[in-house]
Image (cartoon, rainbow, N blue to C red; front, side, top):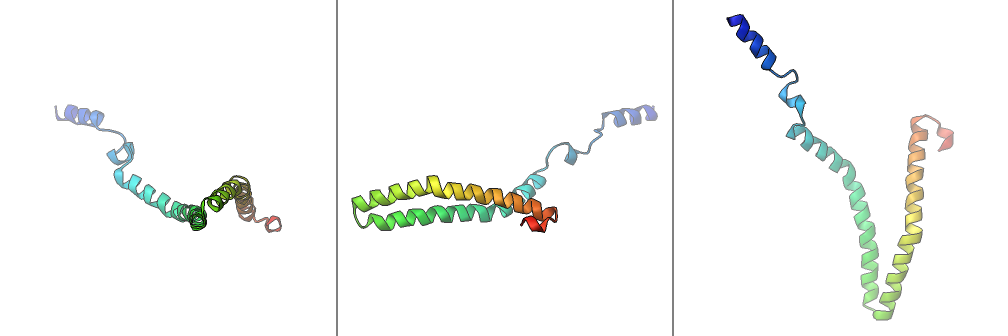
Length: 109
């Protein structure tokens, strides 16, 4: 009889331990902390770039309506054309340089 109960307990117990069946809260929290640690500098740089444009327009706003409208149009045009193009090229260059460095092809840098 005891052997039958042991077999039943063995069949009813999970094969995978509870912590490996799903994501534990500690694992998720640790992963979120790692992501924030990596993304934090990027978020702060993007915020500061936006703040630089915003503060420039705020200073020009003290000069009057016409300078404010001109500065805001210029800032919008520059961010759509120039800054986006440069940021895209920098991202592509970052990928290629990282790949070249990882492959030890230093002449491509």
